[in-house]
Structures are given as C-alpha cells and as structure tokens.
Image 1 (spheres, rainbow, N blue to C red):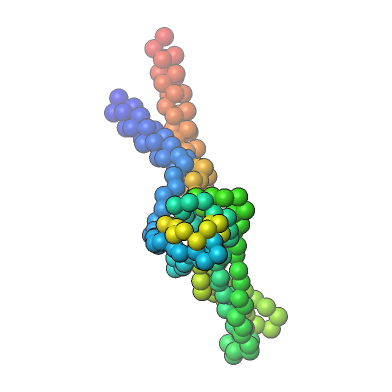
Image 2 (cartoon, one colour; image 1 turned 180 degrees about the vertical axis):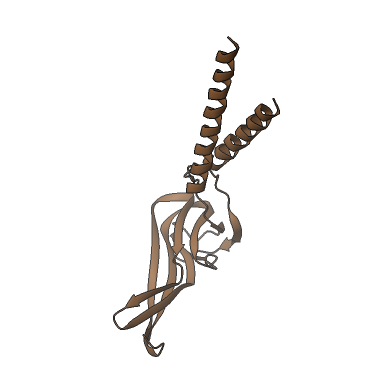
Length: 198
C-alpha cells in the first residue's frame, strides 16, 4: 500500500510539472522607461524624443498624446563590425548607420510599435572572422498635430516579452512520458491485483 501512495504521489508530481511546463507564459513589461512632457508644435509638427534601447532584445514603444496626430516613429541605430584574419590580426572595420521606422498615417492619440536591437555576433568570413555589435543613437516620434497648440505626450519603452504557447523542452517530454509510463504500470499492477483476487 505504501508503494501505491508513493507511486500516486510521484505521478501527481510529474503531471503537475508537465502542466506547469506546458502552460503559456504571459507578457509583462520589464525595465520600462517613460518620457513625458508638453510639446509646442511648429507648423503643427512636433519632434518628440523617446527613450533609447539600452541593450540587445525586442522592445515595445507605447505612446499617448493629448490630441490626435499623424506621423512616423524613427529609431536610429548603428552596426559596428571588425574583421580579423585567422591569426587574430585586425584587417578592417566599419560602422553602418541604420534606421527603423513605423508609420502612423491615420490620426491617433495612442499607439505602439516594436523594435529589435540585434545581439552581438561573431561569424566566419573568407580568411578570418567578423565580430559585430549594434547600438542605438537616437529615438524619436515626428508627428503632425495640425495646429501649434501644445500637446501633452507620454512615450514608454519596455522590453517586449511575448506570450509564448507551451513548447516543452525535451526533458519535459521525457518526464511526461515517464509519468505516463508510471501511471500505466500502476494501472496494470492494479488490474493484476484485482484479477488475482477474483
């Protein structure tokens, strides 16, 4: 009987772990930065400074305005790379200026967009290796509000953690299969005990 209780407890524990591993992960902002203020448009247009992305990853910008406007969000970033020969000697390097944009052609008072800053990399090239990294140099929203009346704004930058459906690790699958095996063995043993008693 103690074997049945420990077997049952182990089965429940394994199934609980499998359910936790298969449950979805909800999104939540991490390391949020917010810029707020009042802009004074000139000719109806205001350029609003936004927080810069601090490290590689996927980020979500969200914004709110006190009145509707149309415009564009612009993230300026740079790719810096250096190429070394197989002996580790520097051959050449360069900086590439890159731009990411998000358009808002219809009038909005709030919205959001995503930006991904790639991770540093190291990749083989003919006769050597290329090492590179990316960093932001500017982030702003350029919006037309139609008049020169002041506009209150808020722009928030947060790390984007998307909702992920459960994709279990191989170890989780193995544990789940082991749990099903234990359940099957317990049921088979139980049926064997019942048939012996009859």
